[in-house]
Image 1 (tube, rainbow, N blue to C red):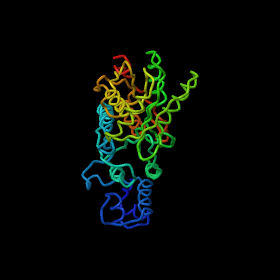
Image 2 (cartoon, rainbow, N blue to C red):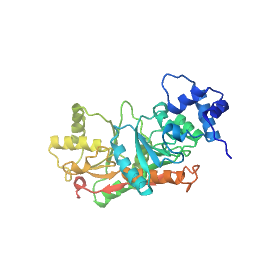
Image 3 (tube, helix red, strand yellow):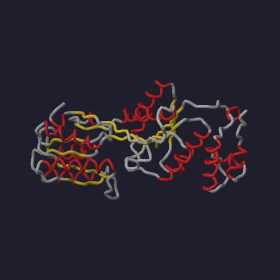
Image 4 (cartoon, rainbow, N blue to C red):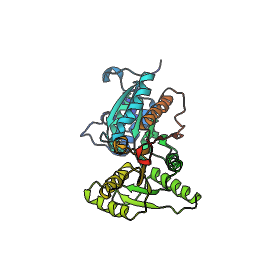
Amino acid sequence: MKTRVTSFDVAKRAGVSRSVVSAVLNNTPGIGYSEEKRLAVLKAIKELNYHVDALASGMRTGRSRCLAACDNLGNKFFLQMLIGMKETCTSAGYHVLMYGSGTTVNERKGLVQLYMQRRIDGIITKDSTSFSDPEWVKEIKLLGIPYISVEGYPEDDSIASVLMDYRLSMEMALSHIEDRKLPPPVYVEIYSPPEYRPNWGDRKRREYYVQWMDRRGLAPRIVEREHNRRECLDEWWIEWLRRQELPLTVLSNWSCGARHLYRAAYRLGLRIGEDLFVMSADNTEQTNEYLIPSLSSVEVPYTEMGAAAAARLLEYIEGERDIADTSKIYIPPRLEQRESTGGG
């Protein structure tokens, strides 16, 4: 008969007291322990295959049939990801736990505790395309937690992530502009202050735009502007637009860049879709179809990305895919042709 592993066994293997084991498992405030001891406890739990006692914790052993979805709850794309994730989980008989958190290991420790207590079977996080945290990777790998990042770790092959094909998004946008026989576009690249540091997605967009222009024997025209909501910045756009030869086509990496152009065009009496053709390479502000005139765009399919992340995670959990398979999942963007490029 197999002997049940207890917290005493874990404490002995880790070389710590049982109170430290309990504190690590329950994230108990007020009980101090070093990071070295915490990792030793987690390693011992994994090696001994220790499960929190089902009766003592009020939950059954085995799988919880619940996946955690983690992000800052203020992220407007999190809800879209959740919709796709929920659809996949519901059809497979799983639940979704929404976990509001940040991006650091400390802010995500609660997820680890939930997994060790068998309250969740795996984790999906919504990250930015510039996100990469070696400490979080170390934590996940140490415990063998089934994990998927939506948009994070694009250049880290040790973590499975769901990504939009950003090069394809630019190919779709530029093909649409060319098909409409519009002038070759100026590329407006909006970035988050205080300095220009494009993330992986924007680097892919820019690379493709430059290559597209080069293949046609044209000099790339790129405008870099920081993202800022202050009204006074409209004056810069007005002066810039006043100096351009019309008709003009502008492709913005973020939809907020298109919004600045709309306002500047209005102040100058220019007509979007006739004097000025505008297109966005994403749907960051979720207002593209509601602008007047509506904004043509290549939109990030967050719902589909959430569904794909859940499907991969369930493959890990159900044993249909080796957890060591961390290959990337690329989801194609969605072209929405609207009035701002003379269509719609």
